[in-house]
Image (cartoon, rainbow, N blue to C red):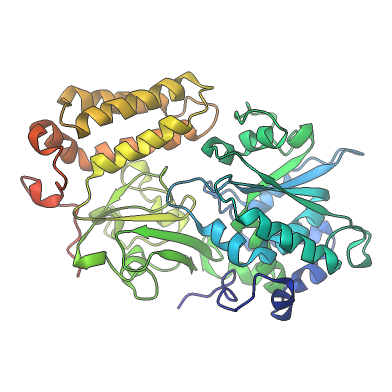
Length: 452
């Protein structure tokens, strides 16, 4: 059974409220941290090996150390709660059920970074959660953990919740900052980076909800103890949003030493494939990371077990690997059509492109339309090659990673499941039937796992 740090008290009734949260050790990390210096806190974060839990996996302590500290200019911490990645909902769980964990992490992080005004930028579709966060903020303020002269230390902090308008692009940190300033959410050119010129051109750190929540157990148990959990550079625990064709969808906390096979089939986690089906493929890090067929997902290219951590999932590069990403673990069974799912993702990215970069603005539209042709039985073999060519021209040629996020699912789908694309070309009359799963293909796909 994996060690729980973030969700250890999630089962306790009333943990959403300050009194219950405090009774179970809440805000003890704040009391400890405010007796430390900002440099000492930063060193603990570095020692912990904590990596950003929003998708990129960049070392958090290193990111914080880049923050510029010009004399007389305010600095800011902004929490990215714009959790819009399809298949990802673990930050929602934290904010909805354990909001004080985020607030406590923000207090410690703000003290470390020298931010006296910090923000939570929350996804517009999470319409009910801002009220929960604002209640938690008010409770913390009434208890003396926010506001002026916190616990008599002379440190002041105000936290504000800003509701987004429902744009996926605002999950990109510079587009988020533009939106927070009241502008259209277009990503900025970098440099300058937010650590130098961020919110209102002031030094700013942007981290996601899980990353900031993880600061609390790091301070409680020390960075050195936190680093002992996990393996290699994948330290600590990671929240996984598991969904798709599994028996037990939900949010799970893992320590990144378990195998993908154990995560999918263990009763502690996903509980196996629903309805007795076989595993076909998985998107392990949210919709933007490459899909991986079962035969490569459960074993790496050299025959070793693939584990639920940053390094193992990326083993072999994008030719055979994928990414931990945001931890949105989407499982597909043998009856699922990869072309159809890729079309759904392409439609999403085409809709969510801000239109600032030509490769993304035009390319996502072309990919969506070509996939629609293929899915509807109107495609050709040339369309498959054209689709491959278009995604290559998008990847790496945009200001922000949305172009990559749109290209990678298409590239991986063609790379691993080209036979399905070709089946659609060869069998146009069957493409519009209601169910054309594995049974309709001429030969069984080798990607399907032979696991009970």
